[in-house]
Length: 344
Ligand SMILES: [Zn+2]
Image (cartoon, rainbow, N blue to C red; front, side, top):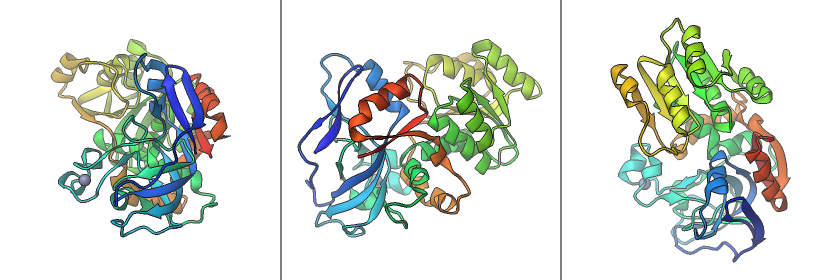
């Protein structure tokens, strides 16, 4: 089959690989009808070191169940399913606590261990716990929004929850990629009163405003901190949603949190120690967050997508074929595209 393989920094190829197939009795085999390129895919795309083994990329997809193992009981051939970016059994202590990314039988797609979904097909471990059957046909108009339940909408929601967004709260979102934009949707959905988008790309800002952002701050660093304070009566915001993962972004996040506020971080951290520990300490700022257990949120978010109350699928601004995936990486890395959908 055809699949996306990252060989090195800047070197992503679509090539022939061994067919995905059932290995464990708890596996399902899914034919991918839609996948996407994630902002987090850009980190290894930019930074993969020489000597690291190649890996089949992709951790977001909707597809059709092609085959199931003998131990799979809730899925049947032909089901339209969405996969979260992590697989999980749905039965262990952490899954019961809603923290599926820490499942004792879990793991992540698109790693050296488990080939990813930017491919014609993907093997799904722990299929009963991992996959969610969608009550739609494969050509449904809602497919773009449903696809975001794989990652970006669930991750934006997790960030908002981690940042303790709630009714009447003030919120700032750092990062104007697809996750940041979905975090705006999530913050509004959870009742935030003021949502400050930190970004400077006109198309992304326009979308953020349509999703519910009330203010935009385009400055960076200390100037950004001063602007957010000015917009919030001098104190900063209750909830900071950090969707970048750099040292600078975390410093800014702590700088704009009001005393007693919370930073929810979902940007994969590219710093060794969390910066800003002194201002965080003196302001009693909570630092929270991590990889989103998106599997825990699909049932909660799915009705809003099906009813059209939220439209996270609008973050997709480019659709490509599998063979065009290398150009999709280039376009997202150059910030020409917010999020790229792949139709194998
Ligand atoms: Zn589990």
